[in-house]
Amino acid sequence: MLCPGKMQTGPLSEEGPMDAAVKPVQTGRGRRRRWSAEQKLIVLQEWQTGIPLEEICRKYAMNAAQMYRWKRSLDQGLKEPGELVPKSQVLGLQKRVEELERALGRKALEVDVLKKAFELKGLRLPEGI
Image (cartoon, rainbow, N blue to C red; front, side, top):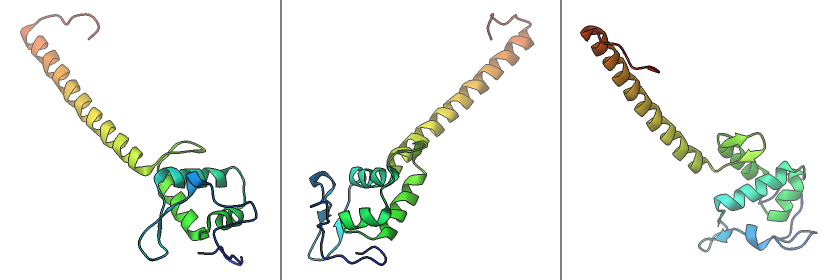
């Protein structure tokens, strides 16, 4: 996989071999590689530091389009500007927020029902409700 307009002979770059922590797993007999979420984050954070995309593509022997796909898939997982989070982690947190919102809605409905019951019986509500 090559960056547009760049010649490349292998996974080695001028800086040396790929970092062992970022080296993807080669699967099967083909050229397809598997990158873990942590590896993708490392590469994307390197890009965010200002290193040109072409250099990163050469360093990791990958296509620029792959970087853009990773960035697009992780854009929904931004905690704060500049801090990347895996999309799978964000989806889990979104589900938890939805569960808590439903629970809050049920509790609010219970409070409303109790308020109506107190009003019908002519009782005073406790302070703070």
